[in-house]
Length: 280
Ligand SMILES: Nc1ncnc2c1ncn2[C@@H]1O[C@H](COP(=O)(O)OP(=O)(O)OP(=O)(O)O)[C@@H](O)[C@H]1O
Ligand SMILES: [Mg+2]
Image (tube, rainbow, N blue to C red; front, side, top):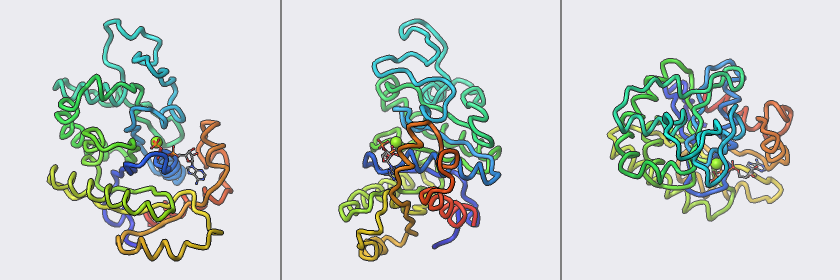
């Protein structure tokens, strides 16, 4: 099972895998909301410019594709203050502006849960690699400072491996890796583990590959033991979240599993990770 994050003193956690559609956002959402439900103070960071997590938790809408407006209905081309979201925050840090970080955070999107939203799909284009890289150390120290106000900071990331993902992973102390329960997930896992090691080396910090979470697990396949053997060589605790129709259904309704289906097997599986691997 391995030591819990709490016993290690780590509380800034990225949910990452460069592969798309493996359950990162669902995992970030339900781990963050589950920790909040357990009485913890939690900040969840939507680190994906697509804004999927913001769409579920945010109070204001994510602008439609092609619109770089700020979600307030402000016209895209008008002069306006930087939007209060992840892109605005990175831009402000890169421009060395004094950053009142609490302005960027939506408080109490759920009880005990705050959100740093993403509303700008064009973040990478508008900021460019150099600004994102320039902001990376400032963003990391900002998250460390925020960790004094929260018990946990959970960071969702996008299926990519550019400067933004590096900046996000480098700002975290541990990484939880969602994977699909398939043998070809091995190469994806090797890639993200290498990325975590490179981030740690480049930014001169320790980042722990804390847990592998196999989402959409189907026990009836009868191969679980075989997969467990294959993945045991990575010496990282393995968890499973069963495949459940409640997951897509809850997302469609912009609900967490704790709100939509607290008695589901998938909720039970996320609760197990929280109890053992985070709080244990
Ligand atoms: N345990 C589960 N059972 C059934 N479906 C699931 C489960 N977990 C995730 N899904 C579904 O898998 C799809 C992908 O999930 P999610 O959006 O969390 O992946 P992602 O890794 O964040 O994707 P992206 O890389 O595009 O950001 C969604 O449709 C989600 O509802
Ligand atoms: Mg996602």
